[in-house]
Image (cartoon, rainbow, N blue to C red; front, top):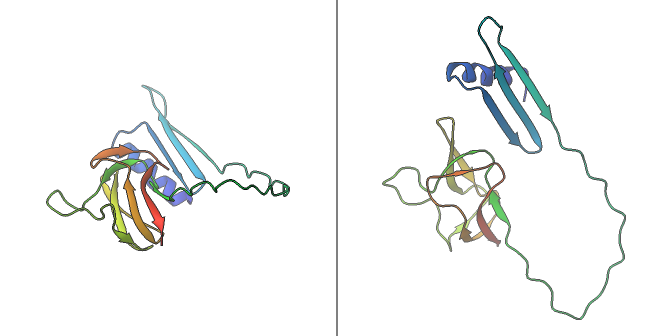
Length: 152
C-alpha cells in the first residue's frame, strides 16, 4: 500500500465522517484514526506493520506409529476483508456455489461488501465445496473461514 492509497482512505474517512479505519491483508495491517476537536487541527494517526516472522524450528525426529492417521481437514476459503457476506450476486439470483459443487481457482464463490463496494471472492483452489460456514447477509471478519473445500 502506498501513500496515494492511504490518502484515498483518509479522504473517504473525511467524506463519510468515519473516525477509525482498520484493514489487514496478507500479513499487512493498517489502522487509521482521526482525532478532531473544536479549535484543534485534525490529526490522522497511521500505524502499519508486518507480523514478526517466526523462526524455523530445527527438524525433529519423526516418530512412526501403528495407529491410524488423523483425518485431514479440508482447506478453508477465508474472507480477505471485513464486510458483509453474500452468497449470490443479487437477491433474485442463484447462489454462486452450493455444497457439492466443484470449484477451480478462478471460481467466484461469494461477494463480500465493504464500504459499499461489492468484492467478488474467488476460491483460489480447486476441489469440491464440503461446507458453507456463514449465513447469507451476515457480517464477516478478516480471515474468517467462509467455505471448506475438499481438494481435487
